[in-house]
Amino acid sequence: MINRNLESKILERLKNSSSVALLGPRQVGKTTLAFNILKRIPSVYLDLENRTDWLKVQDIEAFHKANADKLIILDEVQRLPEVFAPIRGLIDSERRKGNKTGHFLFLGSASIELIRQSSESLAGRIAYMELGPVNAIEFTNNPNDHDKLNRLWLRGGFPESLLAGDDFISMDWRKDFIKTYLERDIPQFGPRIPSVTFERFWMMLAHIQGTNPNASKLAAALEVSGTTVGRYIDLLVDLLLIRKLQPYTINIKKRLVKSPRIYLRDSGIVHALLNIGTYNDLLGNPIVGKSWEGFVIENILSFLPQSAQAYYYLTVGGAEIDLIIDFGGIPADLWAIEIKRSPSSGVKRGFYEACSDLNPGRKFLVHAMSDNFPMKNDIQAISLYDFMKLVDEKIR
Image 1 (cartoon, rainbow, N blue to C red):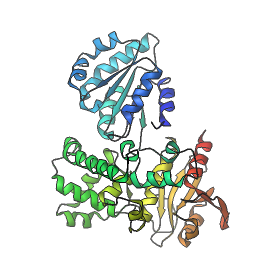
Image 2 (cartoon, rainbow, N blue to C red):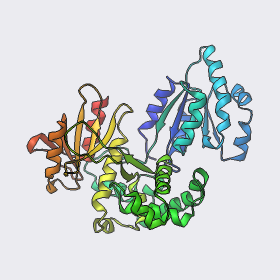
Image 3 (cartoon, rainbow, N blue to C red):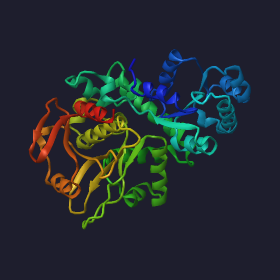
Image 4 (tube, rainbow, N blue to C red):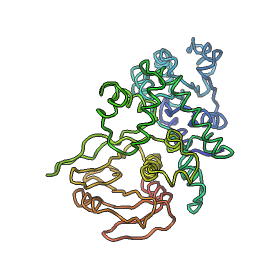
């Protein structure tokens, strides 16, 4: 059992919101988290993929009346979008009685569908939260446990993959996960796409992890249009499987790269798509650097509050910052982050140039080792674990 940091935040949000939508990809642990909440507050759980539970909410007013003193948890709620309209009336009725918080918890596996469906009916009555794969701090409380960190990096943060008996069982689980999305979930939410074509596309994105993809080249390789490639990417973004990291743009006299950078959000899925089964295989693969970069970015972003924004920075001349965190404020409170597996790799000239352009408040080299030490030009070399703790302290 892995305790998820988001659990306490959901309980706190339910104290201040009529309903909460918890979004995340399939098998990431949303249902397990919901059952933990069941143990802590009076609740009733319904899985809308279960026919019996689906029938129970056909008359949601009657079901709510019978369970008026409980939190109603609806799993896979995007399968029944028509339930949101009557729920609005139920929430408003409870508000008039003075019961303003904690009525519904929605679990959904597709962000755009759930947000579109719920926001139309529940505007001002719902809060959104996102559960991603298990992160480093959730998996270990020991910053020196490199075996656990490497296992998390290799297998990714989907609990069943991460906790599998060995690497081969973990790989089999991830292969089945990919197959399920190709044959079931992607056809459900997107246009009719041949599974073989989409699997090739997904593998292509794994090969170019952490880059600015050329849609024309991808389209030519797949024999589809550039517009179709854009739709494919957007679908994987909506399913919370890839991330578009947006560029940081400011008015300076330099030509900036302004296209988003693409990352598959779970390192284990990257490795499964590329058939990287063991840690030694990973270390010998050309993707190792970009895989580590994506892993670090997802771990860090799992700790950021909604008020903080994440970007990358790249000029045509080569000035580059792997990750910028904007904590807000005027002037902007910026942290600049270079990501390397080993601090001995040092910081490239492009990072110094980019920091000269942006003048960030703090500068870091985040690495896979345990040592933390100052470097020249006020750059702090810091382990991933300790950097995540530092972010947590800042936002508390």
